[in-house]
Length: 136
Image (cartoon, rainbow, N blue to C red; front, side, top):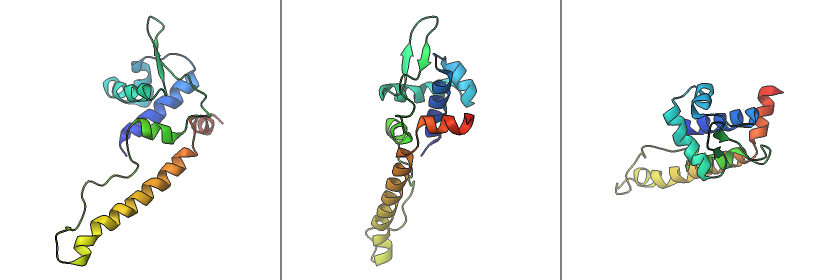
């Protein structure tokens, strides 16, 4: 999982709490990230219809949904990310050693189970849950 996930969740909670349109500069300031980087994340959220935009002087990004109905799994899916990714596998399928040749598939299965467990946890947490943890 990349930092895009944290940026996306933070932006959604911010927009939900504000309840109106916010510019990318305003959101980026609260998230503590670069507005250009934020806009890349917001574009993915908009494509997934988790946020909307309004043009004009009073325009910007806003959260049009019921915060109790938007869970963190939806955010993860909108970013096309997996909770756990591995940059390098150990072993070699062509190696004569059973351990070296079998480890990759075994670890893929372990990572798959870990991803499934993470996704189930994320499904249970909503934008409203996070807002309530912050504001009581």
